[in-house]
Length: 337
Image (cartoon, rainbow, N blue to C red; front, top):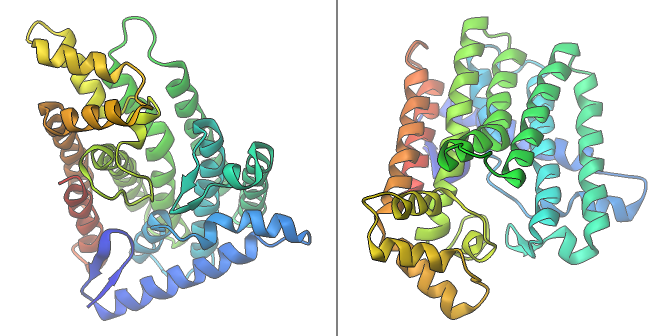
Protein backbone atom coordinates (compact mmCIF):
# COMPACT_ATOMS: atom_id res chain seq x y z
CA UNK A 1 0.00 0.00 0.00
CA UNK A 2 1.40 3.38 -1.01
CA UNK A 3 0.16 6.85 -0.22
CA UNK A 4 -0.68 8.74 -3.40
CA UNK A 5 -2.45 11.91 -4.37
CA UNK A 6 -3.86 14.64 -2.14
CA UNK A 7 -4.53 14.23 1.60
CA UNK A 8 -2.44 11.04 1.70
CA UNK A 9 -5.03 8.95 -0.13
CA UNK A 10 -4.09 5.29 0.22
CA UNK A 11 -4.62 2.91 -2.69
CA UNK A 12 -4.86 -0.69 -1.50
CA UNK A 13 -4.50 -2.39 -4.85
CA UNK A 14 -1.09 -2.77 -6.46
CA UNK A 15 -2.36 -2.60 -10.04
CA UNK A 16 -4.41 0.55 -9.40
CA UNK A 17 -1.57 2.06 -7.41
CA UNK A 18 0.81 1.49 -10.32
CA UNK A 19 -1.66 3.00 -12.79
CA UNK A 20 -2.23 6.07 -10.62
CA UNK A 21 1.46 6.66 -9.98
CA UNK A 22 2.32 6.19 -13.66
CA UNK A 23 -0.53 8.45 -14.71
CA UNK A 24 0.43 11.26 -12.35
CA UNK A 25 4.08 10.99 -13.39
CA UNK A 26 3.04 11.28 -17.04
CA UNK A 27 0.89 14.30 -16.22
CA UNK A 28 3.85 15.95 -14.48
CA UNK A 29 5.97 15.45 -17.58
CA UNK A 30 3.15 16.79 -19.71
CA UNK A 31 2.84 19.90 -17.55
CA UNK A 32 6.53 20.68 -17.86
CA UNK A 33 6.43 20.13 -21.62
CA UNK A 34 3.33 22.27 -22.05
CA UNK A 35 4.86 25.16 -20.11
CA UNK A 36 8.05 25.35 -22.17
CA UNK A 37 8.58 28.33 -24.43
CA UNK A 38 11.25 29.51 -26.82
CA UNK A 39 11.44 32.55 -24.54
CA UNK A 40 13.28 31.49 -21.34
CA UNK A 41 11.50 34.07 -19.19
CA UNK A 42 8.10 32.73 -20.23
CA UNK A 43 9.22 29.22 -19.37
CA UNK A 44 10.34 30.41 -15.94
CA UNK A 45 7.10 32.21 -15.15
CA UNK A 46 4.88 29.48 -16.64
CA UNK A 47 6.63 26.73 -14.69
CA UNK A 48 6.72 28.75 -11.47
CA UNK A 49 3.63 27.15 -9.94
CA UNK A 50 4.12 23.80 -11.68
CA UNK A 51 7.45 23.39 -9.90
CA UNK A 52 6.01 24.68 -6.63
CA UNK A 53 4.06 21.43 -6.46
CA UNK A 54 0.46 21.07 -5.38
CA UNK A 55 -2.02 18.34 -4.63
CA UNK A 56 -2.69 17.48 -8.32
CA UNK A 57 -6.22 16.78 -7.15
CA UNK A 58 -7.77 17.14 -10.61
CA UNK A 59 -5.26 14.91 -12.46
CA UNK A 60 -5.76 12.28 -9.78
CA UNK A 61 -9.49 12.34 -10.46
CA UNK A 62 -8.90 12.02 -14.21
CA UNK A 63 -6.71 8.99 -13.56
CA UNK A 64 -9.21 7.31 -11.23
CA UNK A 65 -12.22 8.02 -13.46
CA UNK A 66 -10.33 6.48 -16.40
CA UNK A 67 -10.31 3.17 -14.53
CA UNK A 68 -13.96 2.70 -15.53
CA UNK A 69 -12.85 2.31 -19.15
CA UNK A 70 -9.42 1.84 -20.68
CA UNK A 71 -7.02 3.78 -18.41
CA UNK A 72 -4.29 3.56 -21.05
CA UNK A 73 -6.33 5.32 -23.71
CA UNK A 74 -4.18 8.01 -25.37
CA UNK A 75 -6.51 10.87 -24.43
CA UNK A 76 -6.42 10.33 -20.67
CA UNK A 77 -3.10 11.96 -19.77
CA UNK A 78 -3.47 14.94 -22.14
CA UNK A 79 -6.94 15.67 -20.74
CA UNK A 80 -5.49 15.63 -17.22
CA UNK A 81 -2.80 18.08 -18.33
CA UNK A 82 -5.50 20.34 -19.80
CA UNK A 83 -7.48 20.40 -16.57
CA UNK A 84 -4.42 21.11 -14.42
CA UNK A 85 -3.14 23.82 -16.78
CA UNK A 86 -6.54 25.48 -16.60
CA UNK A 87 -6.50 25.30 -12.83
CA UNK A 88 -2.98 26.73 -12.66
CA UNK A 89 -3.93 29.57 -14.99
CA UNK A 90 -6.79 30.55 -12.70
CA UNK A 91 -4.38 30.64 -9.76
CA UNK A 92 -2.20 33.22 -11.52
CA UNK A 93 -5.27 35.37 -12.13
CA UNK A 94 -6.74 34.80 -8.66
CA UNK A 95 -3.53 35.94 -6.99
CA UNK A 96 -3.63 39.19 -8.96
CA UNK A 97 -7.25 39.84 -7.96
CA UNK A 98 -6.55 38.94 -4.33
CA UNK A 99 -3.19 40.74 -4.25
CA UNK A 100 -1.78 37.53 -2.78
CA UNK A 101 1.90 37.40 -1.93
CA UNK A 102 2.28 33.64 -1.39
CA UNK A 103 1.04 30.62 -3.31
CA UNK A 104 1.95 27.02 -2.46
CA UNK A 105 4.62 28.18 -0.06
CA UNK A 106 6.48 30.32 -2.61
CA UNK A 107 6.19 33.92 -3.73
CA UNK A 108 3.20 34.39 -6.02
CA UNK A 109 3.93 35.31 -9.62
CA UNK A 110 2.45 38.77 -9.15
CA UNK A 111 4.60 39.38 -6.07
CA UNK A 112 7.69 38.24 -7.92
CA UNK A 113 7.20 39.76 -11.39
CA UNK A 114 4.21 42.09 -11.11
CA UNK A 115 0.54 41.88 -12.08
CA UNK A 116 1.03 42.19 -15.82
CA UNK A 117 3.38 39.22 -16.04
CA UNK A 118 1.11 37.14 -13.80
CA UNK A 119 -2.00 37.85 -15.90
CA UNK A 120 -0.20 37.21 -19.18
CA UNK A 121 1.32 33.98 -17.84
CA UNK A 122 -2.15 32.78 -16.93
CA UNK A 123 -3.26 33.60 -20.46
CA UNK A 124 -0.27 31.68 -21.82
CA UNK A 125 -1.33 28.60 -19.84
CA UNK A 126 -4.90 28.89 -21.14
CA UNK A 127 -3.51 29.02 -24.67
CA UNK A 128 -1.40 25.92 -24.14
CA UNK A 129 -4.39 24.08 -22.66
CA UNK A 130 -6.45 25.01 -25.71
CA UNK A 131 -3.72 23.72 -28.02
CA UNK A 132 -3.80 20.31 -26.34
CA UNK A 133 -7.61 20.31 -26.31
CA UNK A 134 -7.73 20.77 -30.07
CA UNK A 135 -6.19 17.31 -30.48
CA UNK A 136 -8.81 15.74 -28.19
CA UNK A 137 -11.74 16.55 -30.45
CA UNK A 138 -14.61 19.06 -30.68
CA UNK A 139 -16.60 17.45 -27.84
CA UNK A 140 -13.70 17.96 -25.43
CA UNK A 141 -13.35 21.57 -26.59
CA UNK A 142 -17.06 22.18 -26.00
CA UNK A 143 -16.99 20.62 -22.53
CA UNK A 144 -13.97 22.67 -21.52
CA UNK A 145 -15.49 25.87 -22.91
CA UNK A 146 -18.71 25.35 -20.95
CA UNK A 147 -16.78 24.64 -17.76
CA UNK A 148 -14.59 27.69 -18.28
CA UNK A 149 -17.69 29.84 -18.77
CA UNK A 150 -19.08 28.53 -15.48
CA UNK A 151 -15.76 29.13 -13.75
CA UNK A 152 -15.57 32.74 -14.91
CA UNK A 153 -19.25 33.30 -14.12
CA UNK A 154 -18.65 32.03 -10.60
CA UNK A 155 -15.76 34.44 -10.19
CA UNK A 156 -17.86 37.36 -11.46
CA UNK A 157 -20.72 36.44 -9.13
CA UNK A 158 -18.30 36.35 -6.22
CA UNK A 159 -17.01 39.79 -7.13
CA UNK A 160 -20.50 41.24 -7.64
CA UNK A 161 -21.97 39.68 -4.50
CA UNK A 162 -25.54 38.42 -4.04
CA UNK A 163 -28.35 40.41 -5.62
CA UNK A 164 -30.88 42.10 -3.37
CA UNK A 165 -32.98 39.59 -1.51
CA UNK A 166 -30.73 36.62 -2.34
CA UNK A 167 -29.57 34.49 0.57
CA UNK A 168 -25.79 35.10 0.83
CA UNK A 169 -25.09 31.45 1.71
CA UNK A 170 -27.01 30.11 -1.31
CA UNK A 171 -25.22 32.66 -3.48
CA UNK A 172 -21.86 31.57 -2.09
CA UNK A 173 -22.57 27.88 -2.74
CA UNK A 174 -23.48 28.74 -6.34
CA UNK A 175 -20.19 30.63 -6.63
CA UNK A 176 -18.25 27.59 -5.43
CA UNK A 177 -20.10 25.27 -7.81
CA UNK A 178 -18.92 27.49 -10.65
CA UNK A 179 -15.44 28.39 -9.46
CA UNK A 180 -14.39 24.96 -8.19
CA UNK A 181 -17.05 22.34 -8.83
CA UNK A 182 -17.14 22.90 -12.60
CA UNK A 183 -13.49 22.06 -13.25
CA UNK A 184 -13.42 19.14 -10.82
CA UNK A 185 -16.50 17.78 -12.61
CA UNK A 186 -14.66 18.12 -15.94
CA UNK A 187 -11.70 16.19 -14.52
CA UNK A 188 -13.96 13.24 -13.73
CA UNK A 189 -15.81 13.60 -17.03
CA UNK A 190 -12.66 13.70 -19.12
CA UNK A 191 -11.17 10.69 -17.36
CA UNK A 192 -14.26 8.58 -17.94
CA UNK A 193 -14.95 9.90 -21.44
CA UNK A 194 -11.41 9.59 -22.73
CA UNK A 195 -11.21 6.03 -21.42
CA UNK A 196 -14.33 5.05 -23.37
CA UNK A 197 -16.52 4.42 -20.31
CA UNK A 198 -20.26 4.05 -20.81
CA UNK A 199 -22.23 7.30 -21.02
CA UNK A 200 -24.13 6.53 -17.82
CA UNK A 201 -20.81 6.10 -16.01
CA UNK A 202 -19.51 9.38 -17.44
CA UNK A 203 -22.62 11.18 -16.16
CA UNK A 204 -22.35 9.64 -12.69
CA UNK A 205 -18.69 10.59 -12.33
CA UNK A 206 -19.38 14.13 -13.58
CA UNK A 207 -22.03 14.67 -10.91
CA UNK A 208 -19.72 13.13 -8.31
CA UNK A 209 -16.97 15.58 -9.28
CA UNK A 210 -19.29 18.58 -9.06
CA UNK A 211 -20.20 17.79 -5.46
CA UNK A 212 -16.72 16.72 -4.43
CA UNK A 213 -15.29 19.96 -5.81
CA UNK A 214 -17.66 22.03 -3.70
CA UNK A 215 -16.89 19.93 -0.62
CA UNK A 216 -13.18 20.36 -1.31
CA UNK A 217 -13.48 24.17 -1.34
CA UNK A 218 -15.70 24.20 1.75
CA UNK A 219 -13.06 22.16 3.56
CA UNK A 220 -10.56 24.87 2.62
CA UNK A 221 -12.90 27.45 4.17
CA UNK A 222 -12.94 25.49 7.42
CA UNK A 223 -9.18 24.97 7.34
CA UNK A 224 -8.56 28.68 6.88
CA UNK A 225 -10.13 29.20 10.29
CA UNK A 226 -9.42 25.97 12.17
CA UNK A 227 -5.99 24.84 10.99
CA UNK A 228 -2.64 25.83 12.42
CA UNK A 229 -0.96 25.31 9.06
CA UNK A 230 -2.89 25.73 5.80
CA UNK A 231 -2.28 23.13 3.10
CA UNK A 232 -2.12 25.77 0.37
CA UNK A 233 0.84 27.45 2.03
CA UNK A 234 -1.29 30.31 3.36
CA UNK A 235 -1.25 31.19 7.03
CA UNK A 236 -4.47 30.60 9.01
CA UNK A 237 -7.04 33.35 8.70
CA UNK A 238 -5.72 34.60 5.37
CA UNK A 239 -9.23 34.92 3.95
CA UNK A 240 -10.31 36.77 7.08
CA UNK A 241 -7.47 39.26 6.79
CA UNK A 242 -8.31 39.85 3.13
CA UNK A 243 -11.99 40.39 3.89
CA UNK A 244 -13.14 37.34 1.90
CA UNK A 245 -16.51 36.16 3.32
CA UNK A 246 -16.12 32.37 3.44
CA UNK A 247 -18.81 30.01 4.69
CA UNK A 248 -18.05 30.20 8.45
CA UNK A 249 -18.26 34.01 8.25
CA UNK A 250 -21.52 33.84 6.30
CA UNK A 251 -23.03 31.48 8.87
CA UNK A 252 -21.99 33.84 11.65
CA UNK A 253 -23.54 36.83 9.89
CA UNK A 254 -26.78 34.91 9.30
CA UNK A 255 -26.93 33.99 12.97
CA UNK A 256 -26.13 37.55 14.10
CA UNK A 257 -28.90 38.98 11.90
CA UNK A 258 -31.51 36.43 13.00
CA UNK A 259 -33.89 36.74 15.91
CA UNK A 260 -31.83 34.06 17.70
CA UNK A 261 -28.66 36.11 17.41
CA UNK A 262 -26.93 37.01 20.67
CA UNK A 263 -25.02 40.18 21.54
CA UNK A 264 -21.84 38.08 21.29
CA UNK A 265 -22.79 37.01 17.75
CA UNK A 266 -23.35 40.62 16.72
CA UNK A 267 -20.13 41.80 18.35
CA UNK A 268 -18.09 39.17 16.51
CA UNK A 269 -19.85 39.95 13.23
CA UNK A 270 -19.05 43.62 13.71
CA UNK A 271 -15.42 42.78 14.40
CA UNK A 272 -15.26 40.69 11.23
CA UNK A 273 -16.72 43.50 9.14
CA UNK A 274 -13.95 45.86 10.26
CA UNK A 275 -10.30 46.20 9.32
CA UNK A 276 -8.51 42.94 10.12
CA UNK A 277 -5.11 43.94 8.80
CA UNK A 278 -4.22 44.79 12.38
CA UNK A 279 -2.63 41.70 13.93
CA UNK A 280 -4.39 42.04 17.28
CA UNK A 281 -7.86 42.46 15.73
CA UNK A 282 -7.13 39.59 13.32
CA UNK A 283 -6.10 37.28 16.17
CA UNK A 284 -9.22 38.19 18.13
CA UNK A 285 -11.47 37.53 15.13
CA UNK A 286 -9.78 34.20 14.38
CA UNK A 287 -10.10 33.04 17.99
CA UNK A 288 -13.74 34.12 18.07
CA UNK A 289 -14.64 32.18 14.94
CA UNK A 290 -12.78 29.10 16.09
CA UNK A 291 -14.96 29.00 19.20
CA UNK A 292 -18.22 29.91 17.43
CA UNK A 293 -20.91 27.41 16.33
CA UNK A 294 -20.70 28.91 12.80
CA UNK A 295 -17.51 26.95 12.23
CA UNK A 296 -19.28 23.69 13.07
CA UNK A 297 -22.13 24.65 10.73
CA UNK A 298 -19.60 25.05 7.93
CA UNK A 299 -18.14 21.64 8.79
CA UNK A 300 -21.59 20.08 8.52
CA UNK A 301 -22.09 21.63 5.09
CA UNK A 302 -18.75 20.19 3.99
CA UNK A 303 -19.76 16.74 5.22
CA UNK A 304 -23.12 17.02 3.45
CA UNK A 305 -21.55 17.74 0.06
CA UNK A 306 -18.98 14.98 0.53
CA UNK A 307 -21.74 12.53 1.44
CA UNK A 308 -23.73 13.58 -1.63
CA UNK A 309 -20.65 12.96 -3.78
CA UNK A 310 -20.20 9.52 -2.26
CA UNK A 311 -23.86 8.67 -2.78
CA UNK A 312 -23.55 9.50 -6.48
CA UNK A 313 -21.14 6.58 -6.86
CA UNK A 314 -23.66 4.00 -5.63
CA UNK A 315 -24.79 2.76 -9.08
CA UNK A 316 -21.21 2.03 -10.18
CA UNK A 317 -19.92 -1.54 -9.84
CA UNK A 318 -17.72 -2.29 -6.85
CA UNK A 319 -14.04 -1.99 -7.73
CA UNK A 320 -10.83 -0.55 -6.33
CA UNK A 321 -11.25 2.71 -8.29
CA UNK A 322 -14.71 3.23 -6.79
CA UNK A 323 -13.27 2.60 -3.33
CA UNK A 324 -10.55 5.18 -3.99
CA UNK A 325 -13.13 7.76 -5.08
CA UNK A 326 -15.13 7.05 -1.93
CA UNK A 327 -11.91 7.43 0.03
CA UNK A 328 -11.49 10.93 -1.40
CA UNK A 329 -14.89 11.87 0.05
CA UNK A 330 -13.74 10.63 3.44
CA UNK A 331 -10.45 12.50 3.07
CA UNK A 332 -12.23 15.79 2.35
CA UNK A 333 -14.33 15.34 5.47
CA UNK A 334 -11.21 14.48 7.47
CA UNK A 335 -9.55 17.69 6.30
CA UNK A 336 -12.46 19.67 7.64
CA UNK A 337 -12.13 17.96 11.02
